[in-house]
Image 1 (cartoon, rainbow, N blue to C red):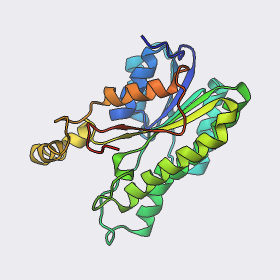
Image 2 (cartoon, rainbow, N blue to C red):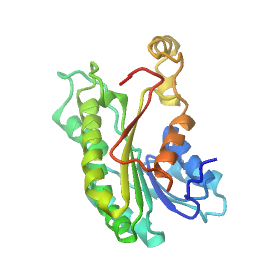
Image 3 (cartoon, helix red, strand yellow):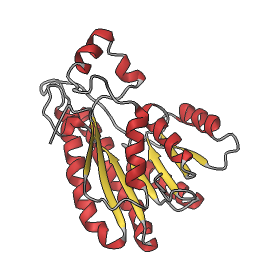
Image 4 (tube, one colour):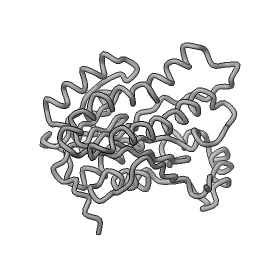
Length: 248
């Protein structure tokens, strides 16, 4: 069994309130970590924290709008006053499915603010402490949308492609300090949002996956846990969790 070394570590997960984010919170909690759970949906985030950690000792729910640099700075201050962050999982995302002609400049900027700029700001704010302590793990939740061109994916896909590039740059800069930076690129994940497309559309999309089904949030979360573990000698990599939808 993998000894992750995460017991007693502090993990910040963005987009924590539901779907993959909630699965990530559960997975790291199971490893004995402390969780700073950050989401814009304060009610859902607090409800999840209360359900998983009734004592309130191991999960700190934090509300922040990741499109606002000031809110990011304030959230980082609050979290680090609680506990120094050892692991950052950049999971929050702003999806957008519109054609090239439909996207407004404001929507383009918002997608990039949440999916890319927020990752830059959070990493810069928290990596300094990791470097000082000689240990840190950063896991960026990317997407197959950043690896393959898809109609209606101009903003979201381009932002996720930028995230993959940023992952490698940060990995090169932080490696000398014992901090690793990696990305996980899922395809579709079995969440209520994905199920909402309807059974016919879901069946058509699932048929494109060689393994014949979509991933569970727990399967994706376990990859993030591995990359965050002390046993991981991996940095600058992208782990594809897509059931064979993209083979490289």
